View 1: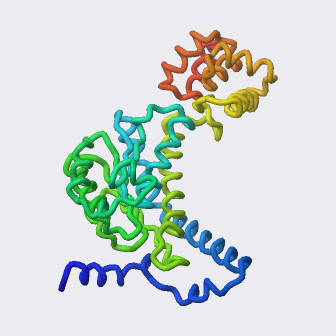
View 2 (view 1 turned 180 degrees about the vertical axis):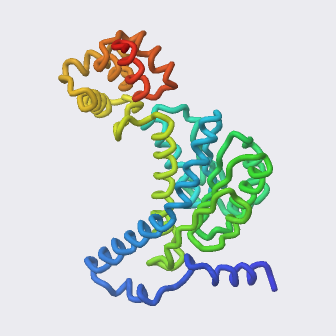
Length: 311
């Protein structure tokens, strides 16, 4: 059997490559019915993610443990899957005020592949292995592949595991090849796509939902959120500066004027401004309290209040 025949046979076993007769007249439907069909399949993607919540929770715990040891979270994939990882990683620094190196995304074929197709990049298992060997025992890696068999991703996960990294596979088929030997396997089975084999659809939606959950909860558990407020957001434009003021007002019930004054004293730091408003501390004392609490706002507020009102 030739390599292409073998691959054709393998693809025939994958749900994501299936041709569902329920979608066979897609091109004959009116626009309203086409939209309804697409929307309904988006719900299927969300349901598939919800069914994997136990595995996703284990992945979150493992990622958080590595981040708390000073490690990184690395996403790696090819094509749509790789773009999903890069997209999620790129949104973390402005949302949570992190260093860009904390959560990163790698895509087969490099940055050019974000906008254009790079032929055969997903088959380059050696490139994946080289990327995986860059990780260490304090790092976590999430390998993303709709089919669950992408050689570039499989190579990266295998090499990262040999380096002692925490390994997570994210596939859209059961018993995926990339799931073998990893610490946590997340398999969100979305079934055949509306357009057969186009895994930028349900599979891509499910991948983004999972990555949203992994990165967001890792940041929540790292003290980047207070309640459900983004207290480490970087205020880099007028909208975000207005949001920062609203966040301080919401957290402290202060006036807009007091929020603006506290943010000015805090050099734009929402966390610092909240400590200033809530405790009456100056910026230096507030920063010392936050540093002592490891950047966790709730702990800093509790400690400052205890110091101010000892029993």
